[in-house]
Length: 318
Image (cartoon, rainbow, N blue to C red; front, side, top):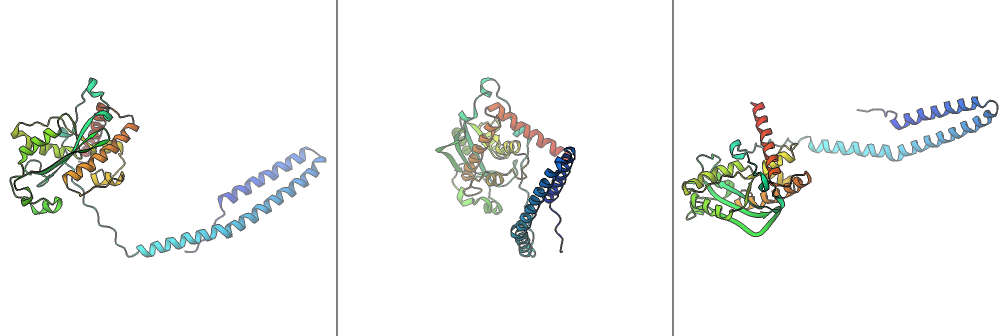
């Protein structure tokens, strides 16, 4: 569709200012009586010269810069429209499952000196699990991976990884995701023994995981027969990210890794995912420090605030 160029705002403003200048000059000349006539002639001639120069400059600029630029932009838009005219929209992404259990996700403030411990000085164990499925009451662990960090710094060489014999066949659909099959776990420790090994590695450290309630549900069930209790819910990078970046639509591990430009090694490898989560956690701690969140109980409060907002949103959705 052909359209006519409208007078630009700058040109209209210049005309208004010029008119006001002429009016002011006439008023001044009239107030000075006869001697103002000479100044009036000089002033009008000067304004006319300035106006002519501006008009010529505008015409030259418009012809040399504005019109070619508009033509180039229009051509670019037409090319983009041509290239995308027959391109089907991308298929919608399947929603990523998010396990939600408020009782497992809610953290308890330590209080006193324990609660005032600086996050930068704390030792964390960031972990991840792979399982036979998503049912936290019936499925089993097939792999545990973890890394130890101090504050935002990953400690070189301090990692933990074990396969776990689930005591049941691993569904092929899940093997396709994490690559672990029945042959891989043959001879591996069972869930109770693996939980005990992990508890030894994580002793005296603060646990961290992504969508932590999911992993904690499996750990608690695996450790119970061996008398191993995981009573302290881990910090959850999902909830921390929800608190720091509420406007994001994707708080998954993949979404946060993309946002923070963190490369994940082999996705759905427990150890590689634990490494990625540790790097995400380190970046989140940096943002927390900028927001004034720098001790244990302050991070607990931030996580619980995100949890309560999530609860409220789910309640409204129902």
